[in-house]
Length: 414
Image 1 (tube, one colour):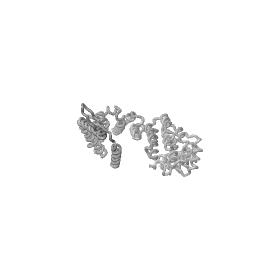
Image 2 (tube, one colour):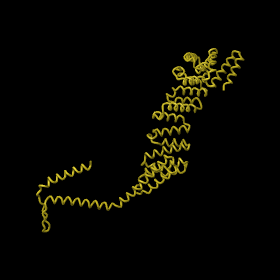
Image 3 (cartoon, helix red, strand yellow):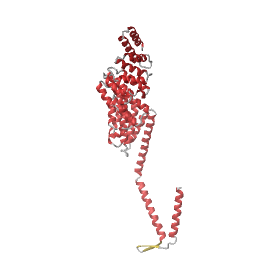
Image 4 (cartoon, one colour):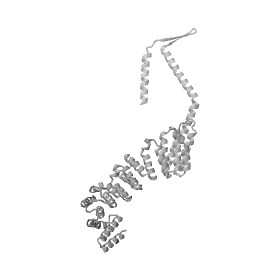
């Protein structure tokens, strides 16, 4: 296509030239020191154009001749730069291929070639990337002293601000390496020093979550996991399980009830509405000597037991089982209503039975506890407690033989 265009332009110039110069009868007279020469105007124009073209060609040839040493030096530096780029690509390929010793050697070769490029002292990015590859390779080889020495060699380049993206990547890599070394506090410090935009990236949040869990900071881990959930870093099922486990760890870290209450209030409202988590909080509050607060946390869920899934209903009921000490009479109609709505649920039955037993309503308690004591789906500890409650009830009635039978049944549960 380009050749056709040039051919059309050539024909156009020929036609224009023939049209304009074919009828030109003008003369040009040149007088110099007694000499006189006459030329046709067409010939004079051609001579002027030819002279200009020859002068331009001579100037370009002279410039090419004078710039030959510089262009030769640039050509040699270009070859060396290509060699450095090839070594960097080779190092990257070997690194991804898990040949870390070869990757380290190729990266060192790229660094050496780049260091000899006197004409390109500002190519910091190649040196930084090659050094990071070399450091990553020796990290995989468990050579931490050499890794730290390589990182120190580019510390000034990373702080200079010339390679912002590479500096952010180096910080993330160093945080990941600190986690591999088991130094979670150092990893958290490195992640905290990141710019806000970099710190909110998914990979940075994953590292922060991992570091917080290693450093036994469940509340920080929970907040980070919530940010990751907003980034859709996990599936919905995995998100629910992760948030639930982290919130449980937060509650388990409480050493007294005041700390537990503060941590419970710091949780997200969605966490406090989670039946599984509320049941675990109630169990923890009971263990710390506050069963009345445990019942207060679990009460709203107990009132809507039929709306919960079987797993959640079981957790709420078992949470109430441990918090029946000192239960008030306001729980009696709630327990009766739950049994009436869910007559075949052993977990609900045993919880209601413990409530009735605590209020010394032995007749109602006996029926429910006998039903729960033989339910294989309940935990062994709950079934043993049901048998012990039945034994205590029998002793209250003076039936020692029946009480002994209940004690034997409790002891037989593995």
